[in-house]
Length: 139
Image (cartoon, rainbow, N blue to C red; front, side):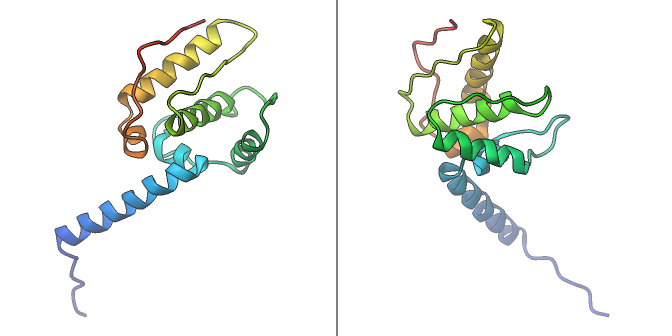
């Protein structure tokens, strides 16, 4: 039985780069691809969009105003945070009002969005010109 030869490292690198470039390009146009590329699953690892998350993203993409009721721990905040990042990537001048029953929750989400913009290298791969603005309010 003949030994199977591995491709040269340059070829492996070129394939990996081409695959990542394709994922980045897809993430610019598809919010679900963006969520999967930039997100991290609870406990680490790659985030995978469940069918219900795809439904939420579709709903938000076709409705200007919405209310989403789902049990705790189903990813509502994560999905919305990633959608807002994706929207900001397309329009950095977008103004967003995040309204909640308490002031604490929107502040937490805003801090998370700022952190993603400042520290998540995958966000920069998809939207290289997205950066933290000069004026950020927390209320």
